[in-house]
Figure (tube, rainbow, N blue to C red):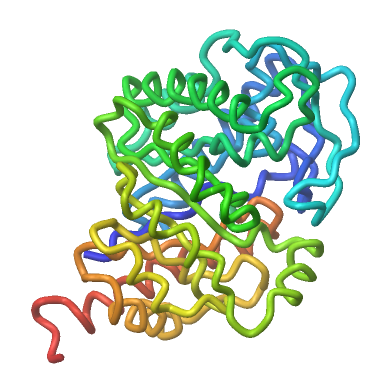
Length: 344
Ligand code: ZN
């Protein structure tokens, strides 16, 4: 009960890449960089295990950014001529590569880090991929001229990699779709369909993560414009509830998301965000357990997975480590409060 996991990313150590940046520069190249990525991956697996998490991941140590890490292995994308583009409905500008030809995988994308992680932990392993709609929102299209068509093309490639990750021994494949919270109607109309295409044929657990973004300035100011109640999930969850995706990861603690939104996910596992990634203040176990308690009004015990609100990539490393410990300690406290042996 209350198996814990992180959303996906963790801070990169300062010997691997620039710290506290969303698109950090690597500190090494070639074989030295590969070794540094491997070292950082193992270090974070150990840290997640030591913190007491039940489901672990590679912390996305091998990719510069959660979307572009995938795109680097896709043929038909021009990385040499990046262009400035407003992403997430112009919330912030990013330098993005351009789609210039039909898309095809150059080969495996994440075999190295997935196999490394699998070889070094007996815990359940979750692996994250960007979702098709979020990819489409993080790349400039000079070829397809149609967002849905391009999303479906990316979904096919994601599916190839997801099936290969499953063969590597990954237990949970999670697609990250922050764009669902920005283009809610599109998400319901075709985003969920593209997501299902990406997950087609998987027999491991499938998940989607939908959040209000990393704890960076642009996102924090955007959240201030969303009003007292954040009801974006209301438009997307019904379509997800009807989909084949098994788990949904959402933002909860310190957000303005009405907790009853979780009711819309009946029949799904819910990864409830109980750790704030936009604040360096470490949650207490009581705060984490209280958040779990509130979510229990809307999510059955056996379907509730305590999680972080989003990735921890741009955070301070020490703070991230303390937050992992808070997550595990809070879930343990919640188990003693709500487990079969609990008083009430
Ligand atoms: Zn997120």
